[in-house]
Length: 130
Image (tube, rainbow, N blue to C red; front, side, top):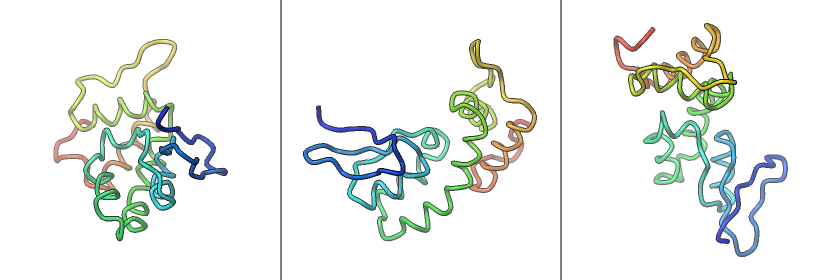
């Protein structure tokens, strides 16, 4: 055992002898700030370069985290697999946003919320899927 995924945001702390990874994107910066190793991430699938900057440029951690918070919120509009497949479809990575039952595809509100989150970070190319 080399590390632990910290899922309790209210009790985020290092564990002696173990690496600590954030369980949620929205506490990635806090985890790095206390000396954690990284994040088990949803948002990195669509904003990996920007999230990598948080590791590469620790002096910009607060600024980058603030910039990414709207994306984290947008990807929280639906269960992770639904929001992420929707985002990857909008980016043209996946041909379809469809998920397996018992999940259902994102509805119009969820899809629009994800789209707006991607747009705020410039993560959609011109002519992206509607």
